[in-house]
Amino acid sequence: MNKPSKQELFESVPIPKALATLAIPTIISQLINLVYNIVDTFFIGRTGNSYMVASVTVSFTIFMMTIAFGNLFGIGGGSLMARLMGQGKPDEARRVCAFSLYGSVVISVLYSLIIFLTLEPLLRLLGASDATIGYAKEYVWLVVILGTLPTVVSAVGGHLLRNAGYAKQASIGLSGGGVLNIVLDPLFMFVLLPEGREVFGAALATLLSNIAACVYMLVMVKKVSRTAPLSMSLGHARAIRRADLREVFAVGIPSAALNALFDLANVFLNALMAVHGDTALAAIGIVMKSERLPNAINIGICQGMLPIVAYNFSSGNRERMEKTISFARVCGLGISFFSVVFFQLCAVPIARIFMNATAGHVEEALETIGYATLFIRIRCLASPVQFINYHTSFCLQAMGDGRDTLLHAFARQIVFYIPFMFLLDRLFGMQGLVSAVIAGEACGAVFASILLRRWLKKLHTAA
Image (cartoon, rainbow, N blue to C red):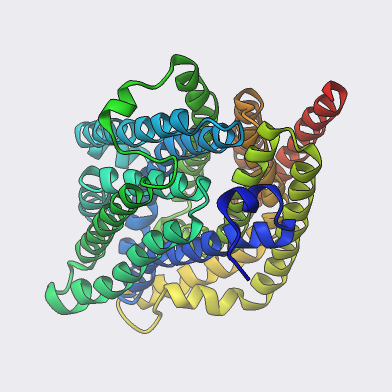
């Protein structure tokens, strides 16, 4: 049987097969990307040093902003590309692609400069103590100040390839970077560098891996641009239409804000948790890495769904668009409920994966494991409602509805989650602070469902 064309994939291939074709490579790359994001914590945890683990927790908040910049141009540009393809406008899609790539370079350099100028006060604000700030500085210098450019450009390249129908190629790039990081981490941390430089070694491995992924993505975009509506031409970037520029930012800014607000919420979470001690801060860092497993799968489903929804929204095939939305929702909720059971049963071994209790500071390590086990069992309960929030946000982005995407992101983090943190922390201490995500995500999911239902009703009325 002949392989379906990209147009057939979006227009006529059965929805489960079409979603699987785009989502499975994305899920694989998300999982490998997850592995290489948590592998630093894993190997640093082998030292049994809770202060090193806590330093990565603090640094991770700064690193997460790079995901927001990747979404600004990757999802903003990628969503518009898919809609332009649905409208039969490949030349405009090429200009959007080129602009997105060059825009990601500019914003990466600006972010690195800002972090360089504000590094120590920023780390203190995020909860770094005298025992952790030295390690945190080492990590941020390599992973963020030097590493933002390759990290963001590779993420944008992956989004653009995926939205043009090249999910497999995007997956190979992200996965290859992850595999390289897994190999380099122990090499730098335990072989090439002396004891005590494990954080520096982990950061160096991450930097080199992101550079490799970036180079691959740019080569692949250049290669497929011969037959696909992709481009790296500076001339194409400068020739982007003003209307398309507005459309990129109309979706990209809310998408970036979604991650930025998530990052802001983590700033408050880390700061409030740091009051309870470095071991509690290290524990919440472990939990936030481990819970990314179901999130990575569900985001992969949503990213696979987005180009199909965007294409059929623009081409006017509302029935296929809505069936894709519904099928993706069922898949994601199934993964979410399974993950709740998994984390309840496996909380202890998961916590021990990230913290060695037989080396280094044994007493602090055991305390960190105890906190992490408790926190995992509480926070995993939020997984189903978290998926509803992800799913709705990607649907709105696919249809070009930046206003409601931004409104949902603001309400989810600022109106619901962050206030619940302060309230429940004050009432119930650490357990209340950890439980705030359940209340915040549940309220956000209700609000998200209302927004999506209203949007779909509007489409039916217009039809």
